[in-house]
Amino acid sequence: MSTKNLTGTLLILGPILILGAFIGWPVGEDTAEGELIALVKDPSFSKAIMVLFLTGIILLFTGLSMSSRTLSMSARSTDGSTKWSALATPSGILFPLCIAVMAASVGLNFGALGIHPNSVESANAIYLVGYHLTEGVGLIMGIAFALFGISLADRYADLLHRVIGSLYVIIGIGHLLGIFTTGNDVLGIVTWMGMFFVSGALGVITLRDKD
Image (cartoon, rainbow, N blue to C red):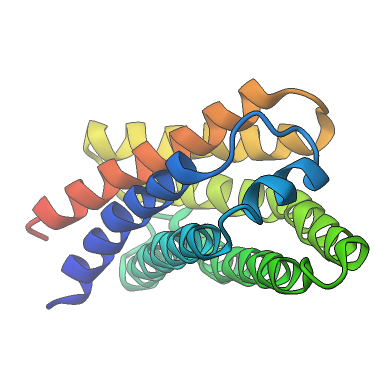
């Protein structure tokens, strides 16, 4: 399998796995404590959902990082016509950081499920940390997606790539705005769903690209 095909496959499979995990996640719980109570009702299933989510995150952001690397290399190898493509270099560094934050959060969730039968208070405290740990990742994703989108739109002349690049910039702005807005679930849902579908579309285009 070529690097291009692997990148496209990761960009498609990642969002699918994450969406699958979202389907099985407890709904209607607005607090970390309520969410944990719902999860401990079936610890094995809850852990499976978390593994599915984290696997999807790893695949998605690895694919984005690999795509960023391809863009940054094309910026170095051309005659300067893609002057903004170099912005893909920092985005390729930032995307893996998202994996690290998500992995830490899932690890804390695993720990909370494990000790809940013996210490409910400790489990709630640990889960609360994991619950809020991902709040800062919006800054990382916002910058990464904005830079990646600019690079993608600048690198390719065709309309489809430029539209996807522009959508990534909007997604990045959505992640950044999400840091400063509280209680706005609609913005978060639209931003994350947009991230999944746009990445899936990029994956399909990457697989079909003959370059």
